[in-house]
Image (cartoon, rainbow, N blue to C red):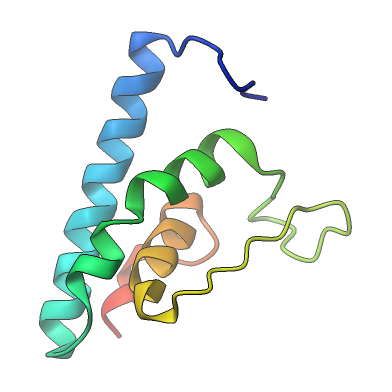
Amino acid sequence: MFQPGAIIEESLLNNLKSIASRIRENVVRMISEAGSGHLGASLSIVDILVVLYFLKIKHDPRNPLWSERDRVILSKGHAAPALYAVLAECGYFPVSLLNS
């Protein structure tokens, strides 16, 4: 698990940037197709969610009810599209469902 103050290898950083870029594209697509939403709120939290879900928290998309999983509470609900896009990228559900 990633430790605070640790140096991130360039390959890991590039991978996280790539993930964040895909998520941003999905967020823009979701909000555009919905015709409403808070784009700034969602885009501003993408990097934080990527670090949490891909480096920090304990979770398993194949076992979402795992009793040892960490919980994330997103208090700014208008950023939910970013959370949904991250969860899809993690494998909790297909990315294709984001636009439904």
